Length: 468
Image (tube, rainbow, N blue to C red):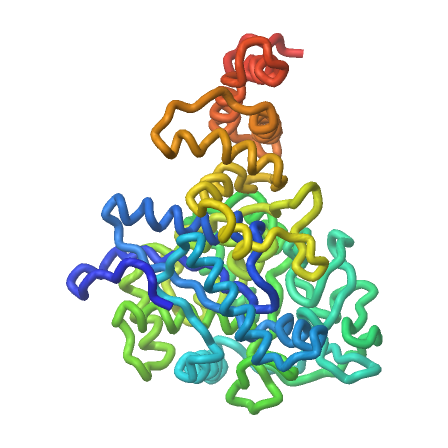
């Protein structure tokens, strides 16, 4: 899928900014919560950068090797290929309806070169001793024998106590393999884990502490990501298996029974795909060729949800450091918090969602994009409600048609005040956002209760309130 602006000629490639957006998993369609996070935001940033004359390479794709795809196929009683094809098509359709475009759209299922390349890059990391093979405590289900990772296991995070699958905890970002979870159980049959020492390739992040510390010091990172990194630096950077003995994913050079961890695959896939698209690496080139190709990249930016902070803020930089990519390439992470639907988290599995494809077919995409930017859960969670969207749409549509705006509807003004109150909390302090929201809410009209509340809050900004 190539729908973005073309990359500049070889003579002008220096200074390219790479923007990576997490590949959606085709175990369901995209919902409005997905769009409100990295997809619309990255597209907005890319369009703005190109309007300034900057060279940008945008990369996304499909995350077909997540075992959530296999779990969905088993749940629906359908072949995994059929599930991938249906939901992959619907994901592409939703992105196109939203006007979200990418220069590179990776599809591992359809690209044999990609699969061979990432397996080859992992083999080179092991051969060069950048990663090591050692016995790892690997969890399998005592009852059904399945390897327990990602969708195949559920338990509680040992750090924050929240529910977690096998991977990174969505609540606090801690890396948690199945053997680390409390009350872990197989999600297929409910069986308890049994630990088997298994030789697997492992990335010892402590080996790259110096490079990672330098990369994190240079990069623009939100406070929550820095808190995670600080905790990891104090507690010790984890050792992460780069592959598993499992039934889903790209086979490694060690054989079909050993498959690349999907997040490792994503990092190596980007390591390979970016220089290939820029024309700075040989088509069949290995690790050295890929790393050399990244010399043309000025900055790398990740757009992501907070639940993926470990993978893009810690694991990907560690893999790049092990490969030899210069530490200064990481520009930063643009991270969104969770978007809620009428007070509850969007959930594909519970069917608690507004599906993006359907919503965009009924609504004007320009208005949807504008609303999702306005209501984006950037520094704190926000809440999509149908009434809130309709009030915003009815207020903004005349503006886009060239007519003068009227006063804010009460529902929209209430949301502006709520955002301002969040922006004035110490944990999410953003006085610029508070000022914009409150000045808009004041426009609800003289004597309106929401306007009076906005003026009261503005006193903190103007210095007209009395300190307690």
